Amino acid sequence: MLFDTHTHINDEAFNKDFDDVLHRADEAGVRQMVVIGVDRSSMERVFPIIDHHAAIYGAIGWNPEDAVDMTEADFSWIKVHLKHKKIVALGEIGLDYHWDKSPKPVQHSVFRRQIRLARAAGLPLIIHNREATADTERILREEHAETVGGVMHCYSDNLDWAKKFIQLNFFISFGGTLTFKNAQLQRDTAAEIPLDRLLIETDCPYLTPAPFRGKRNEPARVRLVAEKLAEIKGLSLENLAAVTTANARRCFHLDTDADRDSEQNK
Ligand SMILES: [Zn+2]
Image 1 (tube, rainbow, N blue to C red):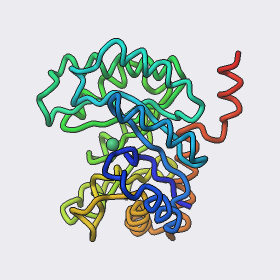
Image 2 (image 1 turned 30 degrees about the vertical axis):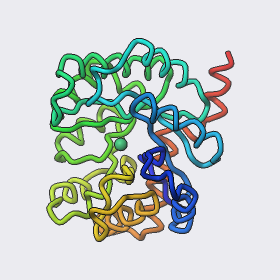
Image 3 (image 1 turned 90 degrees about the horizontal axis):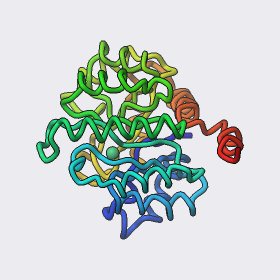
């Protein structure tokens, strides 16, 4: 059984064939996934999905690229909706220096405030980092993100950085880029990551693995990521699937739902 820890099946790219997409995921052995909203409209679309599908969990958080657009009302909305019992993480949040729409200080402030929100809610984080590794690590450390931990999504940095993120209680998640020809650094890094810290994801509809690069990605294709990671780790696909699924359930506290419910009812 496979667990796709990072999907955007709430994206309009899936409007026309949503049920077929879920059916193909099931046939590929992808039995659990997280659907992620990153702005008001995509966050709103998370809830009907998690309310109607037992094995799909949700994450909500404001993305760094649009940090300048986040209002106090958005912040309060996230705070309230984190209480839904199938919201298992706050994210994806982080820093993205590739785009210059949101100045760095604004990105930092939106990132810090949301880390504090996750800590208050006792939820793990899903971290987006693009061309901002040193600042991402520093802010996570300064905000004591290790108290909740979480996921370094679509990891593409080297092993030294990975060790720092693992020290901060994060899991390292690999996606379709692991299968790209030019991704030798990622494969070398993945080879050294401890098994109990590995996760897999699609980030669909983006980052489609080889040999389907350029097409729309979907959760069924997390199997291709799992096959590549199994090859790198010298494990059978079944073993790799079991390990990464157990890690995902541990990361998102899915084996302690009862604890969290009783905590919230106090
Ligand atoms: Zn994403």
